[in-house]
Length: 290
Image (cartoon, rainbow, N blue to C red):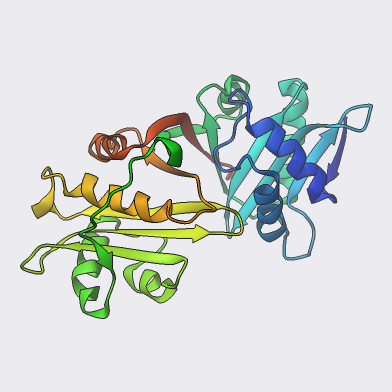
C-alpha cells in the first residue's frame, strides 16, 4: 500500500460517504452526505501549515483502501476512522503509527465507532484504547411525525436570560456553549425556545440550529427544570421544537446523540417521535509515551 496525505477532498468525501452508509464501517463523527462531508473536510481537516490532516492508503489500482483523518483541537483530536475497506489490521496499524508520529503534540485521540464496526473495535483493543461510553443515535423523520398545532413555548427574550442561564449551567456544566454564547448566536437559524409556566417559572428550554444549505438541523441542548420533570413538559416542548424544525421545507429528518445511560431523556425522545438509528461506542486513547 502507498500512504499519502490527501490532496483531493472530493474523492475522499465520496469514499467516506460510501463507507459510512454501512454499519460495519460506520464512524459516528462522519456524516453520510457527500457535500456535507466535503464541506467539513475543507473546514476542519487542514492544519496550520495548510496541509491536510487526512491520510489514505491506496491499493495497486490506486483506489483508497484505508483512510484516517484527525480533527485537531490543541493536544487532542477526534479521529475520522479508521476506515478500512479491504486491508488487514496489520497494514492499518502501520499507517496509524505513521500518522501518530506526524503529530507528536497530540496526546489524546477520541474515536466514535458503530456497534457493528467489529474490525475497528478489534483495533481499539490492539492499540489499548479505553471504551468510555455507549451512545444512541436517534432520528425523527418528517413523514412519520405528527405536527403540534398549538404551541406553548416561545422564542427567547432578554428577560428570560437569568432563568435560562441557571437551568443551562445546572443541566450542562462545562459544556461547549455557555448561556451567553448561545444568546449571542441567536438569529433566524440559531433558535432558543423557552417554556414557562403561567406564573413565569422556567419549565424548560431547547436550543437548535438549522443549516438550510446543507438541509439539516441540530438539536444542541434540551433541558427541563427539576420542578417540571415527569409531568409531560419534556415531550410537549420537544414535539413543538420538532414541529418547528420540520416547518423548513428543506429539512426532512433530525438526528441527535444521547448517552445510553440517560434513560429519562431517551424515554422523552422516543415518546416525542424519535426512533433508534445507530448504537455507537466512544473510545479514548492517550498516547503519552507512545
